[in-house]
Image (tube, rainbow, N blue to C red; front, side, top):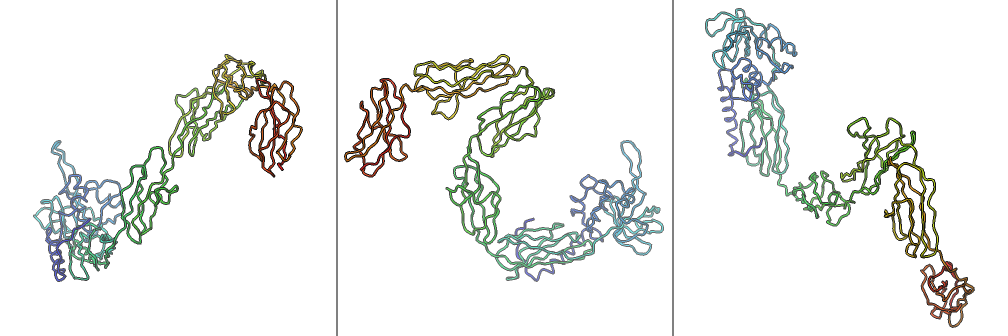
Length: 611
């Protein structure tokens, strides 16, 4: 409850205010201070909420509430008045035939007639005992001569002082544990100019609260706030005291108090920058000397994962997390720290499996992404929907049986950012005959212009073929256009070193891959044999033996671990290298040319050191 400051009240008027409060309370209704406008008879009263305002049960519940007692029979229902004695006794209340103040008198004498059916029901009657004096009980009640009624009952005869009716029967008394009047314990929490005041419920009918400035003596606020146990103030800097007075239905009052100090605080601003994203939290105020709990809101950025916050816009690592603690006493801008996400994708799908009983059916998925996790889902042929399996790895493996033959499965791959992708659905099947490769393709080496032929011979039902090729410069195999058992192509220098394999698939979806083979252009010329490398005053002379069929030779040079560099072509069997530096070691090698192709060369070469 937040209160605006009322007009200041001089300290001399405090006693007059409390006296007026006492007078208003006592004059509420009748001689016992009953306040039918309080929450005890309205919102806090279950009979009022059920539309039973004015009934005897409504009144006794409210009167007990005014004394700090909340009635509860423990079974979710109070029943008619005639049932209260037995219900209360079963709920653990002290019930007997001895009257006492603050007890509920229960009588079976009370009837209600249904206007629709004309049937009369015995519902009983309850009254609240305010005091007992010898053979007389002073009671208050509802639903007898109006919503509120006071009376004196002679206990020995059951006769009322009101009217001249016959006496009535008394079932007994439900005794209530009404708390003794006591002062509330006051607690105060101060944050800057904001003051929260609370106290314990001591069973009073209402509470009067006023706050006093101890520096000036002024009382800027005072009011009866009913049965609330909390109030909020906004106060200026200074020394203060809050008083909380518990006002009981007996008109007795008990007060508690608490002193506190309000200090002006200059807060710091902590603001947020989404740093290329969107949805940054609103700025927060930080109290000096106190840790600030950062906002738990998280910004977003397409293609990026949010790592946290840092003081620099270029930070690669987060220093603070949403909902974390911030302690620096300074105006601060926190920038979002982002990590670019690797796009989640499946690079290799699992394949169908068909094999003999007892074989191991293995399915593997390969994917790219950050922090990947895997979940396989399966469906046997006898059920209609997929269910989650216990396999959470990239590979699913199981022994193939008649029972699981026909099982379908797929894998859901999830990355660290919650993105998911699902593989193709594959099937495991018992299949005969088993797919087998009878003859593998072989490597081919031949002259340029010849036809390189690769064939696979396999056994199985309704076989299909797919050849895959990888050039020397490529990093992975690519699907070719050849879908026959034989792959043939003209061998050229550009195709020399190409590698290939064939995937053979049968009618059951089983697949098997051949060995990987290579096509190579054979060299028509041998490498020249290097016979010498000698250093002279004019350079280094390299010599070699003649190669049959050669029309010229190309000389290469290198230093250290560097690459070969062409020095020029000659038709002789020697070469003098005059472009050398004294003290430097050079290595030489030679290739032969026959008019169409270059031959091989000595990869180690021959070395000499220049003079």
